Image (cartoon, rainbow, N blue to C red; front, side, top):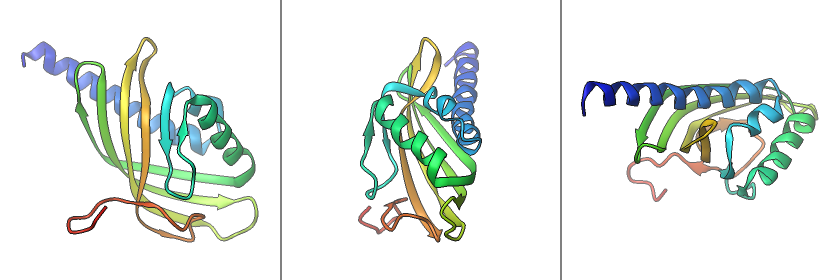
Length: 158
């Protein structure tokens, strides 16, 4: 890989990381339109076994918009340890560590979630977009779902 290719790869990594950060930022601000704009039209979102997997922006929009408007009073998502790889010039994968805090509209106690986002990205004419998002959990306190995909520790069946 020459210096020009290395520079392009670094720029693409920064752009993909920006999408991950934008997802958290817009989700926390309850900006459903901005969250939806981060996905490809045929994107798949898997928040865990307790939630039907969503395919396409119409299904994603319905769940995200409802959750932001009626379920969550406030959220705070923090990502770190972002690792990005490329499957060609227009496809990328990543995982990022996640800490998420939630306040609920129905008065239940606040919750915390520690886990990971696993992503697939596609380069589009509008830039990098999320083609697949899978949420995996290492642990939680008071979280609103009982079943989550595990992060996949050595020796586990996950």
